[in-house]
Image (cartoon, rainbow, N blue to C red):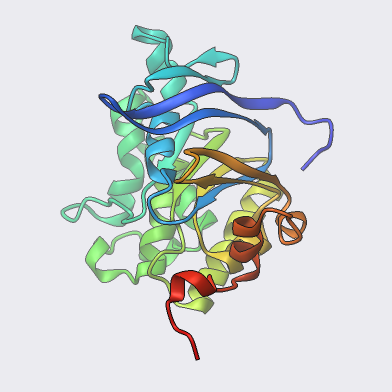
Length: 259
């Protein structure tokens, strides 16, 4: 990450929830261009809810989400459509269409959102699949892919329109350690070689230490951000909960086992 990098995402005074139920409040952070930025927290801390507000699936109760200089919360019509085209999203399950080949899945955003000639759409989709190491799997169906390959295909589809930002929801979930490490390497290479900004929801410590430039940690008790910084620094945090999390230490009181 370039120390002089521009701010590409700015979240200001965000409050998210459902009706009268507040999940998170007073959420403020910035993401710099080319950064691998991780959102983490314990179960029920609101990680996925926050992500859905950042990508426009949910409307926040209060606050603003600025992406490349435009407030997504207030944007409507063509301005909103143009803004949504500036980032890609890969969901935890991969969310590939089972009735379409891998190539057709990756080409779908190009079919839906561009007027490019068909041969150019094909070449673009092939290029994205090659980039994630799936050049030999273009005609396979999603069910024929391993879990790790499905995650790679989802990332390729999220990159179809050449966005500057990729949002990933639990990319390592359900993967074995070797496959997870391979995916970490892919994310790092895409960030470093292509300048893609990543915003990743995860609680996988091994991945966080390998890929994250910076982390925010959510807490379901205070319903806000309780820590922000580099993973190595948060490992030495004075906050007991943050320290236990980053050092993978048990909560002796919560365990209820007294020997």
